[in-house]
Amino acid sequence: MAIKIFIDQGHNPSGVNAGAEGFGLREQDITYAVGIELAAILNADSRFEARTSRTSPEQSLGYSNTSSLAERVRLANSWPADYFISIHCNANENPAINGTECYVYQNYTQSYYLAERILPAIVSRLSTKNNGVRINPSLYVLRRTNMPSTLVELAYITNSEDAKKLSTRQYDFAYAIYDGILDYFGFTV
Image (cartoon, rainbow, N blue to C red; front, side):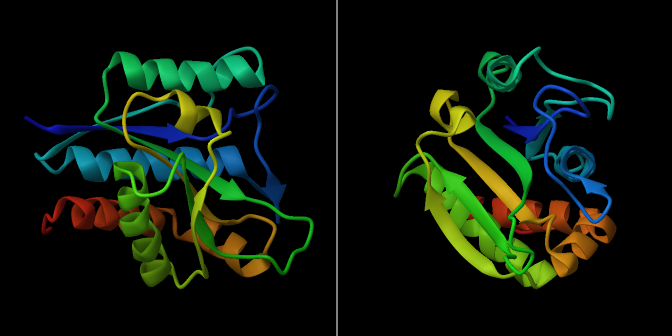
């Protein structure tokens, strides 16, 4: 039986729960594209079955920030997914801040171990700075999902080098997440 992975492309295309912006890029466009690439890679591997929260670039989930997050969690829980990966781009007022990090609900859980595999895979493939696996129990999608969940901040949309990678290497980000997933399960390509 295939391992079911729910890919949440963070943020809506506009309005409620729209994401960060930088260097002419919009977080919601990057997360949508990386999520679609990752789903295609996973679905081409018979060991996995993947679904995405947004099935088209124009699709919006919910009517407020809370309802948007709740709908993403509902879709994953009702499937039910075995794992949940939420894809985001980070932002900071300081344009020098850069790198990749993963957030999980708590230390030393399956979520944590999955994040520990995804993070170095992205850093290795894209030469981003490793900002570590961080604990954040306040994040709704990590708190309310019924399966191991991680939120991946691919890179900083407000840093020029990171933004360049986000705009031109979306497939590489997706493939790196896939590499991390394979490593977590002890699978080979």
